[in-house]
Image 1 (tube, rainbow over the protein chains, first blue to last red):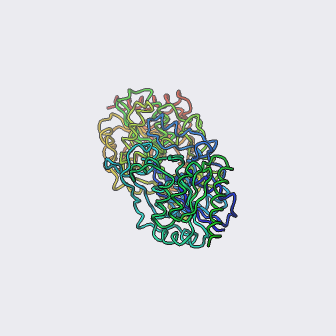
Image 2 (image 1 turned 90 degrees about the vertical axis):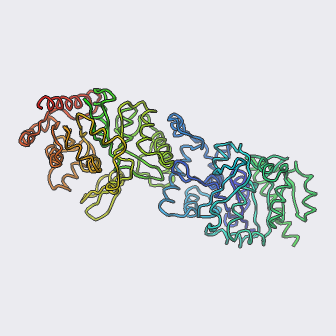
Image 3 (image 1 turned 135 degrees about the vertical axis):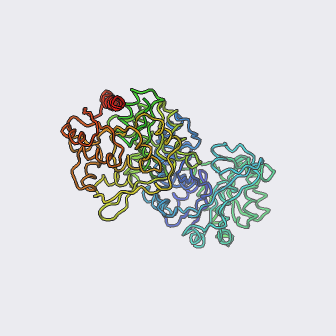
Length: 316
Length: 316
């Protein structure tokens, strides 16, 4: 079964890691959000791409989910000593990734080629694609009218501002990166990882041509909400602010259903009662403990996704 | 005695350190070459400014002359692991300087203001000015016609290419940084540090308005050549390639004499015989061991410069 997975950062990376352990490398393409990419102190930083690649390479920090294991913080400490703002966590080893990516981008190498090179260097076997080689910036507009770069909102302001709207600046002029549309066309299943629908999955779906193809494929999404809360990050708070309702596993399912792309849904066992809602919508579902910490956890959730896909194909 | 010193990197920083130990902070302004500044992996790097500031702050690496003491190289090692070109030595602490400078430059803060802020943070008391806030790039044109950024020529290619010409790209549109012309007008003495005349001192003198003021001031230069060799760097080789003659202490003196700016010259004792030449030109000189390693060495040479200046004022 050929799978194309749409992924954001930490949650997405964990499911993708599970999928990568169950599928042949040639059968898995991961399309990664780049709306969070930004320039920081001159460096081009791609947080979601790095999280996915580090995780698949087995070099990610297991505790934080982002960054590298056995990391040191000498440059960051020095920045603090100088009184410089140091809100973005730049580890010493992680810095090498940003420096080399920036050097190559400045030389005109597209992000997709750079990512391929990094994956080769790190021994990452599945195909990892940035959603686009063009600049797209996720902008959070808060209720005070401030326009915040996503990483400012997320890291600098600890997602405290109340969100009024989200924009993907540059999305209209952006093209899907080479390989993105083909991977979607050629796959048997699109997997939407348990990433934030508003800021991690929406930018990918908003790229010209993507939604139309995804609508014609079986799509299984994994709920990013467990028991009314997001495992990590601002999703539950955002649902309250943007949709005016509490965060539920069903809300996330409905988000994709409204885009006419949801075939199957993986719910956390804690949200089993919401299955009735999905049944009513004609969406098949499966429940499982979706909290992914260990490798076994990741494989368990990935396996549930693939079982649901088999069911979908069996149903046809 | 108010002194304005023109300085490049390591040699200049050492003499300036000696001067800073003999003069009141208000009486010393250092005008630093920025022609070597460049962008590397997205970072704005100012090698000469950093060397002068680190040296005066007492935090420079004593062995290399450039970079910081007790430095670590975690990011650089990681870059090498990734197969990235890593020809420029980016230390982990030094990286913080480059990141913060780049952040501020990208925010529109001029280099002179940034340098002032760094000096305050590092406890550097004399005034350190970049020669300009505008972009000027020293370009080395080799005999094969290649145009090399100075740091490429200097660090990446270990000054192996034979130099045919040197250009200061952007110099015509560059203005001296705020304070530069005033410091030169207000001083009693201009000191030309034992830096490379072609690539460290020439860019400063080539800025609009600078040479004219310097020509009206007593100027004492310290020979950058000792016994036919440069203490560090490509100067002796460059003299052979650009002037077609061997490097001598007298050659460097003549370089400044031809610009009508040389009043006094400090020669190394090993080059004492060249004193006759200087006498013939009507330039007063003093000999001293100009090799500066220890603090005492730096103070000895600085003291000789100031004695020569007193002689010049006594002669008047």
